[in-house]
Length: 310
Image (cartoon, rainbow, N blue to C red; front, top):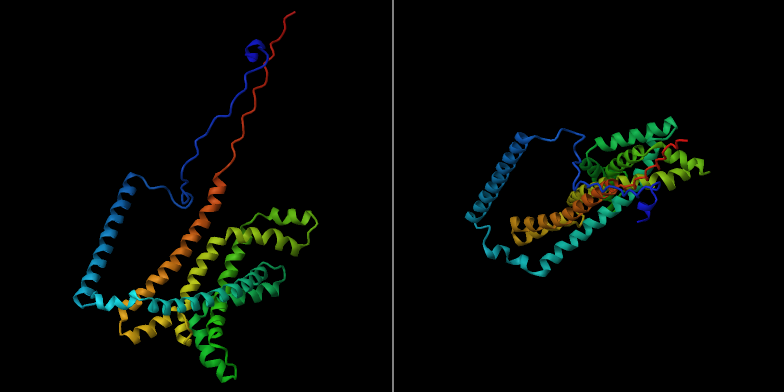
């Protein structure tokens, strides 16, 4: 009512509501979105792939049934708790080895990543040389060196460390590359702003750059931990009590090869699937925060003053 009585004062302008897209096409920067024909071809390929996989599963179940592998008496031992308790003890050994490798490999990986971006050429060269060698040499070869090579030199490590040391050597190189990519992905202004506040270069890297880089590469780190869990299955070579080793012992004791390995596979699927889902959730977090941009209200229009005629 006041706005109508005072013509020089304009009515307040409300900010227009913009509809936020429900789901952003994350891969649009990599390739063009498929058209109608492309979407139809993708749908046909998906249906045919699902039918092929279902046919293979049906054929496999038919082969198992024809050879008596689906008989109830062959699966009856896995309805008892002592059998699952025996396998879960192996799972604890797997998680223990993976946790030790994750801690040691993570710390060594951060040091190697800092060495790769160091201003000192010898440090960059040594860090890059270690990473390239560790990524090239097979983990199985390093395990054999720990198992047969070091005892000839008088060095006999415990069974756990015969598995942990080779996995730490291999995974630290991967962790280093992931952390280095996270550091290089940050704007240079982050470090410069920290230095302008009076921080030393080490403090700027420790308190400003590394926390942001770790948050950005957290999904990749979790995915690498899933791969690390699968690599611990090499512990059967050194007779370490992990999940696959216990599965082998149980299969030879019960003479039930296929049911035992199916149970081991189910445990691996549950653990690794949960970690993969957690990594996907972490990966969607930054996208959701980036898409939630505040909508600024529109500024009121400038009052229009009419020229007075004398």
